[in-house]
Image 1: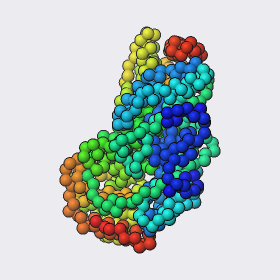
Image 2: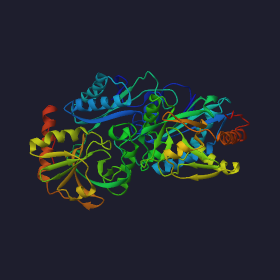
Image 3: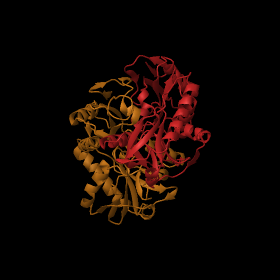
Length: 284
Length: 284
């Protein structure tokens, strides 16, 4: 089943207006989140983020319409799933300028959530594509996602799992789908939200959880050298939770602080259990 | 009428797969070109460009399929029109990686070409968004076009007609829809194709025409100061041909070399007359 324009419909093609600005110009937003036992994890945070971005794009969204799309798909079946919620600015005349009155299109799809995607590990390859801190596409989850597609393809072609995107100044930013954290002793560092980085939902959860585990947390610039020298490097993503980064451009990274990594994974799994009707995520 | 997936159909909604990567990820390309007297202007150049970009994106396109889409719409009616040809990578499973075998979707739309759009004038406002020379979205006409949408909206909100995008180093790059040229005496300069700039079809035509009019042409970095001090500044675009830039951030630019600007406009109009069954474009 799909959610399309206000209702659940069977999988397959839908009646679609080719003047839709999401299709023609990447003029829209999306969120991806898992649901367990019919409960989307961190729904409020995802809806908050998409609405905040939509305000920046000048695209009015109605919270209830977004929530009902995700909830309708989550409640279809208690099996773990991944829901992608997409919003476009709707149709418009030829040209870049949106019409004065827009009718955003909301749709959502549901896919099987693969348990092996959580708490896995990942190798990175540095991408030739750098993030653009001046572009709204770097700090929002927009439909104009081609840099991530191309970076990901480039990484896979090099035999790595994912791309490492740098900021224009050479500091590390994120992967094609995840935020990054560097751990040294009890000190956790993640790149600051300087425009190059998406304000990840799991990133924020780690920031919230860290003090409880006795970890200090700072948001600041990190270099490739910092990453290579760290006790542990991991990425965070709403569907994969935490992934250990084991290699960068073929070089092995330290997993010395694995015990702390496991504690963070367990804390995330606890959060899922509490918020999603007792669902047990296996922590790595 | 629309061209959709291999045939002409009536305007209105089409049967569309919501798993289309153009819609979900901006994973596709487009071209916009005018047609006069049923003849698309510079069709080969546009098809060459979209195929070249598709090769870079790893997306196989069949030249004949693209040509027939544009020609079918051009031949509907001899009245001047603007045709937009769009291509997506087609549908795929969840995630960033395209499927091994892709079936690109080709569609095209036709709109009325407004004669006042050619050889007009335009005011620019410098955008806070800068071009990203490392991103494929800067040098290709991809569906991930949100930077141009946002830049254009920002310019309009400031009371200007269009945005001036700068490169990360502060040199001028392009507008949200056009290339830029600076004229001093008989010397024409346009920003080099360093990754920040789309290789415009009309840009290339000006480069080809310039020597015939006794103008030297160089492709190199240009500063805002160069632009402010020029004898004439104009932008080029496939639908608008040449637009004089009269203002930048509210400051008046020189139109001292207007005579040369008119010669370039006449040369473009001649080209249209020769290639499009004698259609007479009014040169400004």
